[in-house]
Image (tube, rainbow, N blue to C red; front, side):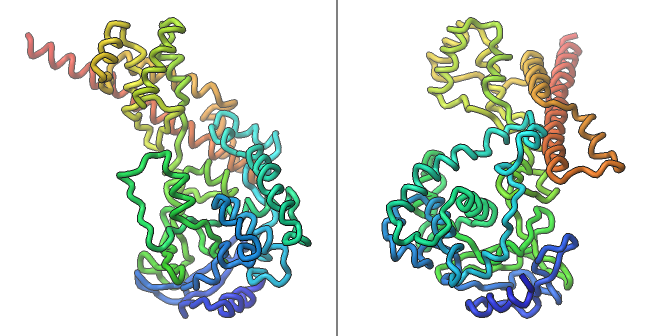
Length: 429
């Protein structure tokens, strides 16, 4: 779609555009927004009326089928997008025509391509089977029950995946006017209810023209009751592209959801350590019954998670150390913890260190390649890596780098402990 066509759509739909904002081309040829002049911080770059945002309330689908409002936010927006994208006269026709029809999200990777991510927990989060179950059990059922409305609409599984990919990659969750989330008064289990009752999942037309980068971010979307505005968060020099912050999301998750990522998101990479791996190492000298009873107790006390995220700095959460201690202590000590309703502190002693190091080694064994092999693959400038393989290698290498830093952290405990021990001995002498 030409720049002139995009501008025409924006103006026709009441979007106010700052005079120093233009549509240009990135080095890779994608349409992007950039500045033609210096722009100070806190300037409104775009102001998009609420009526131009893609939501169920702005589509005739909700008016024709009021029961749509009873669906989840995901289902509502996907059904709305499927409906509007098939209508030649849709007010968002120009926007839909500009969106990609081929995707690099993990749902579209072949088994051989996914094998390159072996060892990464992201493989368990692709959700293709769950999505297709949602299609057959919910979307298709709803469409069939309202066949008169969906006549002429592409409601195939392929169309569902395309609409879902657009929503996954480009949608935003905006808080509904008049609602404020009280984080302190909520449990994690309240998230789904909050997301459906207090937020709207929406598509901002041509919001995808704003690139994402954690380090280069210079603007952000700000919703209100009447509009969604793009506001500069810092001074923007002439000739600078507009970037928003994708948030603290690992590259693996951006790859799953969007099919690409900025390299700056490496600072938010994580590697997951499964609790079963922790328990198998820390509790390897316990009987099955003893191990199971301790697991049950830790679950009751909400001390045991399914998995734990190790962040990019390799820091080891205290929760992991508490779980390790709970499986290292003898029965008498554990029973005293249970009786007194308290559990051990997060120790950084030699026994804990040895467990962590063994966990790290076993976690490494889950990958088909080593860190050194991945570095060699990326460093071989004579080999042109296919895009998907390159991203897979970068993601798995990022996770291995975290394991390396995690190992450095664990080994530093031994140095600190030995230093304290030598100091104590000198004081005694």
